[in-house]
Length: 255
Ligand SMILES: C[S@@+](CC[C@H](N)C(=O)[O-])C[C@H]1O[C@@H](n2cnc3c(N)ncnc32)[C@H](O)[C@@H]1O
Image (tube, rainbow, N blue to C red):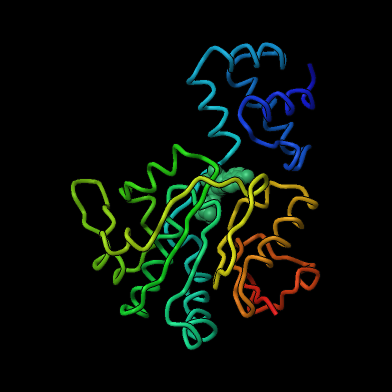
């Protein structure tokens, strides 16, 4: 069996569409993971994944790459705060937001903190989704360690976290603003009528056709005037093709 056949097996076995990923980079990574776990061929690796639940989890963690932190790229979150104040809140008191590929929840909770601090009387809703149900359980729990919260400003730290031992526990008001749900950006339908979609540090792993399809679907899912917030290495060069204008370096506005 070769790596292309391995991708087909992974789709059947795990429901993950690896053909959406940049293939050179993905194949290099899979071969390096195989050598780290001590197998030489794809057939041997499949046999291992079939029989060993720990190896299955390791493979899934490796593919989904769920590294994240609160206020990842803090200065860009300041920019988002400004755009919420100038572009969205003057026109709509209660915002509908989607944090797509949210990992352990640091991103949707960061947005909830910003919104609560600038519009405490509003009732915003934040849908937070990810393909990985194990990390969504951690997200729902809302307990973190210092390295995950270290970028949070003191005002947010004091107001929205309770520190018990070495745990940083999210305040229930912030927790209640966010609903977590399993969702695959490649294989599933998108909800509509969002004021803001945040999708950061995931499309970077996908090939250009898949990226284009995702941006097209994000555009359809946003209200007119809604914003798309992307990762710090993910500028969309062909944003006009999807009906966006640039609101700032990493924020696009649906026309
Ligand atoms: C690097 S993390 C980014 C987390 C957060 N957005 C941030 O920027 O800090 C990438 C996340 O994308 C998720 N992911 C990978 N493929 C996905 C897919 N097809 N659909 C939805 N989420 C996916 C992973 O499970 C992981 O949690």
